[in-house]
Length: 436
Ligand SMILES: [Fe+2]
Ligand SMILES: [Fe+2]
Ligand SMILES: [Fe+2]
Ligand SMILES: [Fe+2]
Image (spheres, protein in one colour):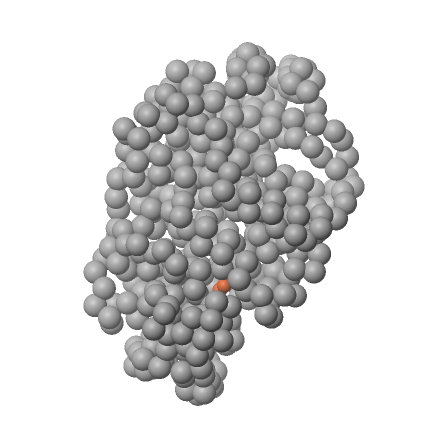
């Protein structure tokens, strides 16, 4: 069924502003406790996932967001920015196209994509800006994503000229357009010369003239070449000073919700799945009497668990019929992809493990690792059960929403077959039986 464009858009906007219910007691606890996180690592993970969507959708080479961030940070260093400011700039640059999955969602409803890529960039900028408000930055980055497509002469989507546009936006704009127009993942000397000529041509029209000069002086061929191909994976972290901080659990929760929303936008049929898993994982944590930090970690694991689905083509994710064996094999790769995206988050190995083992089965028949019962701890088993419970109680193109009792009945069958944990299945029955 096609959703009319405007209705879809209202739906998207309302989801963006929607907050999942948080119990009053938990909310107070969340504000009191902190979690140490390297936000850069989280942002890199997100950029990897977003790049997968961008590659599928726009044909832009992979690692686009990281290359844009690398270029911005390199220019920021020349401008004398300190570590906190560089971190904020890198974060905004990595996230500049964070509303891409909303593109996908809107395209599903028909017609919107053509507008987005030609004249109407406003929704992309507005939705991306709204998402940024969930992120904790050292520096105020208000309006940076909103105005990342503004042109120097005021011909951009909001008609802002150079002196009306934040400097971070202008830095992102010049790096973004350079990468889009010249596919800098495969730089050659000839392409490099063309790029500099092109920038001169659009100086004062698209780009802030001062930044064109800065770009030319900072990016000698060998400096820009460092961002080519796979080099960027190591070059961006090398260019960026480590910036670690304590974040309140409430902030981490907001960030996790953003991850979940971006994942959920990819597919119409699973549009609330990650958010539902996050919420139910936290509710189970409360049921078990875990402290608020563990509850927040469970929420984050639920939000992240299917991030690998961003690497799966929508032809498969959206297929209304049963998947062929070949398609199902591709679908299953999302679990390995979640692991590839998240495994470098060294400061939160427990969350990564809980998220990435959600398709493992106690008898060793699961994926991607084929782990057995003895190798799966309680929270890894819990995430597997929650993933199944959430999926069963969601609408699918081939079946209606299953009621709680029916879902638990199916899960008991799986527990009897030694696929999932029988005790956790009973706990979910107790905890989820009545609505909050
Ligand atoms: Fe953009
Ligand atoms: Fe971009
Ligand atoms: Fe999954
Ligand atoms: Fe899932």
